[in-house]
Image (tube, rainbow, N blue to C red; front, side, top):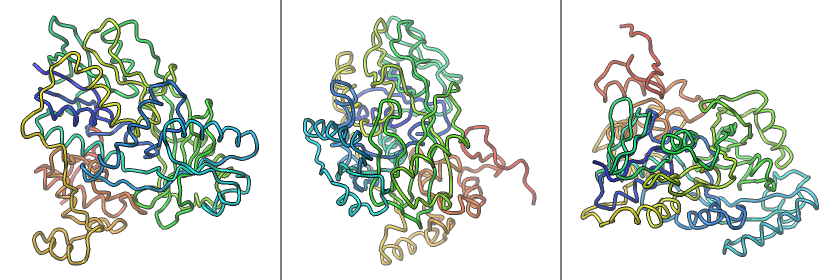
Length: 476
């Protein structure tokens, strides 16, 4: 019998699994997808928001500043990239300037550092701001991360400490028992004392498996983005519009940890929980709105567009609580922005305020919560590269020329705990296919390496989901 089953291997579920793995518990993490972090964690703006925006008195306002303060040390412990780029909230005109004063007051209350910039100072800080921008708040400690890198690292730590990970395991039913619950998937039935529902856009469906009185309704919002070539960098800072209840944080320009720039997102309500395709209308909306804030945005240098679904809900706040009438069933739901930034604090809150009241938590002897960063050739000195290639020549064979990714890096990410099993899984971990050609040249080699390492035919290798085979037949 498990002590805890976590449903959902996104940033919330994996962060919680890592924290729980320090205790002497029998723990399982399940997800319906073929890899870790394949939902909202894979498709978002990658920003560690400082916490000035959430409405006072909300769980968002409580979790966001605390989570942000934990992130830099967390990324050091996990060997993940954490890059401070700063963020400008740009106002256009007197009405929006007044809202900057509200955000500044919230920042003061929460101990968040900032500078108020007049129009001249804002344009000096960010030369590509549009001429409409009249004032800006500079949240200069704002950082960006690689969200799925953090989630995968958390899962690695949890599994290394004894947690069990089950992918391709959608929760099909949950039954109550005298001692807890049985979580059913197509392959297995997991008997457990406690359940944590961190299922993203599917969280309402999961909660309704145990209760009729679910207090939230999730209506997914699709956000569409452009990804710009890292050879063009139109902004140095994250550039936000003044937020609103209707549009949330709005359309942004975001420099990423690897030099690309994200432009987006749109915000469209969708009914289909799997509707993450891009649209002409959504991308046109992004184009129109970014030009209000940033001039000379080279959308003609876009190398990719993508969309993600965020679990927006009618409660307009995180729902982190035991489900009324379902003792031992914890909801970690409606975790939209700033959910990524809040994840470390959410994990601690669930453990300290909810799980500790149901289970005795005893530290596990020998548990290790850190992870050494995998070797990244681009980050090594010439001497370090030479030494690594001497030890393992495959690090000297470049597979992805756009991003300079070696065969050794790809092999290592397949062989690691929670290693890649798909082309997208390799792409998420070490970036072949993330560059200008988007895998046009390196993807066949990645398929070949995966097949060799997994001891299977190339026709069995999938792009992402279990049924997304790339090759129909093999010619020799």
